[in-house]
Length: 299
Length: 296
Image (tube, rainbow over all chains, first blue to last red; front, top):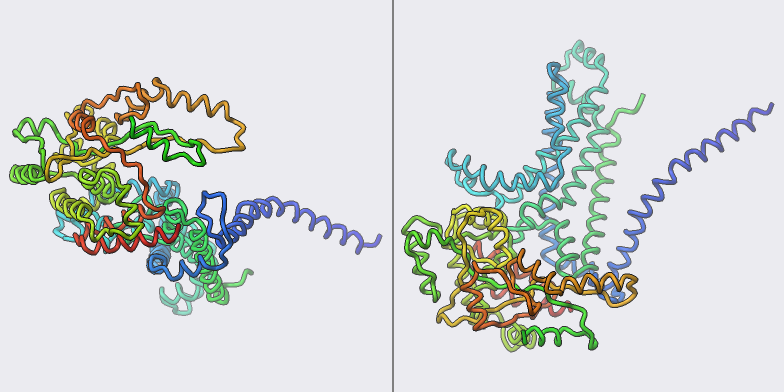
């Protein structure tokens, strides 16, 4: 029997199996993402307002208008600040919680469930609940503690509104990264820690040289998802401040919504969305390249 | 109803009507009747009377106004529109003059006065009004936190739901002279698509119901708004003072500003509520108006 022929047949069959399994997702991805994106890009080159029958192709005029608009620049600056703080706090807080949960032996399942609960709540529900907390509960605490800036709703002050929304986002945003970090921590071989301890490595050195390299893949995923989350934040802002007070929390996501749904600037809204897509893409690529050489290769 | 007939005529496109108004909304100031009766407060007939009333309320440790300035649409509608239109009536001439360059927000005395009065109301409202949403304000007013609540008739069902036992009524927002124009607007209207529709029979049946006395009466009973359908009797006894005034001085305002302007205006008005800078707000409104008409 010619073994080579059997091998070729098996490889061919494997390829077909792979194609058949991949085809549905390719179809869904194309139908729900690629095609709408290409259609959107086309409309961003027109002056369509979203409802009229007729429109003209105007080239990249929308992109130029958007970039020149101070509202867009303010929104981008808001998102950059928001994203940086979100990434830093979510990574640090989730890692600390995951490390604590990793050491917890008593009622560990209960504690893990408690920290995971925010993940199952809808974003808008969380935002509306926190709306009431910021209005009715937090000011009472502020007045008791005699802290001026905490004695009225943080959402009503243009200087604190962003941080209030960020706190809610972090509260909910930490739940899934915590679980992911916990899984990553449990993949670290314990004999490495033992060997390092024997060699005299301290806690920080063990963390930096053993724990972190094993966590890089998870860290990558968390950082990229939080970057995307920070740059595209919409639900919390819409439910809590609608971009106010006075445009203080007008993020790019909200600008896209307002342009498209409220201001009849549909083609400009797509131009904003395309620019945001490019920004998220560039930051993601840079993040991946920066961290890829630091991770531990699979054994 | 003659104003509605004129509206329908003006709303035609290529000689055909695609829109049917159902309900007519109006604005005023809700007030806590029990507190008024208990302390002998009187319904104000002029703006000066309202100022005097607010001073009395503050002396009696009451909050004169509950406002929901976190939701910028309420600043635009329940405050500025509510106050401005008592002197202006319909916006048609004003918007035409703005577009034609014959006037500006900065030059317009009525709009300037409305913004100044809005700032006065904000100063006499609950201290954290910029943090309060529409739903929270309804709740606060219905539970007696403040005595007056400027809003539209559409808020009445929500106030009643928040506190069914509240004794609430509405009076007409006064102006300087007491001789107000009771401006009303079309609130709910229904439009049908022009062609290619396979469900014409079903659409016609639904529109027949919506515009019938039975359907429109049902809507008006729930909403308390006036109806655009002739035979419907609106049940808004709690707004009797305003409705009586509407019957004498009704003006229909059916003029829309350029697309996008209302959103920009709401943002500028929310900034005004925070900084009280009327001049700066008027300048920005002029700039937003020019941007909106150039985009059309």
